[in-house]
Image (cartoon, rainbow, N blue to C red; front, side, top):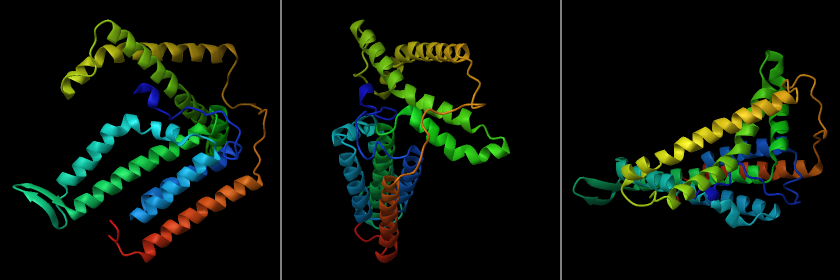
Length: 273
């Protein structure tokens, strides 16, 4: 399960999506998130899915690689669906057995929230799969650079976010190794109820936290030994410039956003779920 997490991983191929400016990809990812929350019918979600699928094909990334990031969230997706399905009391009854009610409003909320979580994970995973941590850090820093006039630590914040994303797959790989080592010594992580599984994770979390703090200390020592002083006087090997491909990508996402807005305005609320 640990190796299925794609957030923070980079898929190194040469594609038009990989060559996009990282600032553009960050802004377009935020626009895609806005589209996800504005969609209110299955048609809107179908448009978003088609856009993500088209982007993955254009980026030469197997779609199963994008879907891998969803596997660790299966429990959260199922829990979100079930909670909204059985604990929403608004709307008309579809099924009623004693005090248990399933309403049309509850079914609608379950589908909406589950699909939103699904597309949020897929969209953000697609951004990290097509953007290296260094480019992502430079893009975030340049987007936050206007706030430097207000003494906002744009470089430090971008560096922390990029390091956090970079170490997600590393920590997951470390957790997978520790889990296999514990299972070889007789630990059981797969049987028992939810409480028993949570207790079984304690022997995994303790060495994982120790390893994470050790890696953080090594990284801090390495940065200090290289005289790292934040963004003061820092230069860049590559200067980011917008290209025609960035303009085309912005127009495509703007078209998707326009279609989602029109879908919300023209279709009656509750039509097709």
